[in-house]
Length: 317
Ligand SMILES: O=P(O)(O)OC[C@H]1O[C@H](O)[C@H](O)[C@@H](O)[C@@H]1O
Figure 1 (cartoon, protein in one colour):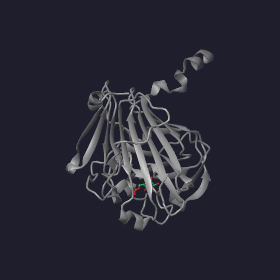
Figure 2 (cartoon, helix red, strand yellow; figure 1 turned 120 degrees about the horizontal axis):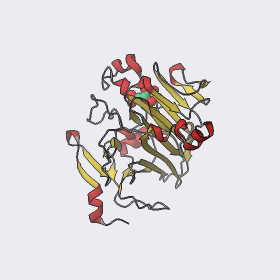
Figure 3 (cartoon, helix red, strand yellow; figure 1 turned 30 degrees about the horizontal axis):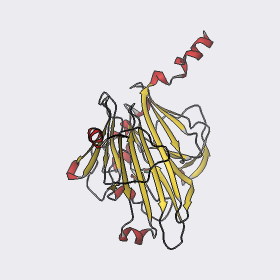
Figure 4 (cartoon, helix red, strand yellow; figure 1 turned 180 degrees about the horizontal axis):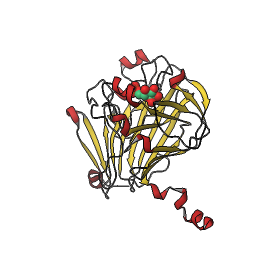
């Protein structure tokens, strides 16, 4: 366990843009993470060289109630238009609080840089979605610069009613050039195509690359997905737990132009790959809790490349 004094070095509470409350996590080797209490949203993740790994639009409004465009918005209790609520639910445009005394995790890690946030419904929220819950979000910056998000959602209804929700960590990765990006781990899977009325298709071909707008929900994916940025020679590895689906989105030029909070050319520098639970919504009875976890790491591409796997090089020589 870290002492309070030690924790101060790693977790700083301060003001962000427009005076919004922000928490900065730091790790000794220099990596950092920023989390806004508005939206419970991670808005920055930097590696030990100070390079930004997440995309945040230059036109992002850091002005509630509009959600911040970029980073990792939380979609809850509804992903996209899969229900009657506003697009992506309301968690991304609510003010979260720091949770001073969260229930412990079964396995407490030695990580020092983490923050626990909590969202409970306001009376206004209950009118929109008639349920009581506690949504606890732990954001952790690991010793190697990895970024972990763990959500724990508990049904606290006192009227005996269950509730059902869909969910996504709507992660915007920063990439050098979208036309040089490849995603591995989703080949041959079934997906719902949001550009074709959520119709179901099967992915064909070897790997996923980009040359036009994409908005797909891949179903029941492996727990590990890799996003390769060839130009930057960087690979993001996304690991997920409790979140069977994965959304891939890039608005491309026309849609980006129509969006007031994305610059016309900025679609080239972003790719959303979102650990999600969309196809089969989660139902919780009163007292029940759900957990969904996403872990991100960024490594030089050579570490991941099959060609450079020493075993494979030896076998092929
Ligand atoms: O503009 P937003 O409400 O933030 O949504 C941005 C995008 O999020 C997801 O990736 C959905 O699949 C897209 O259909 C949507 O356009």
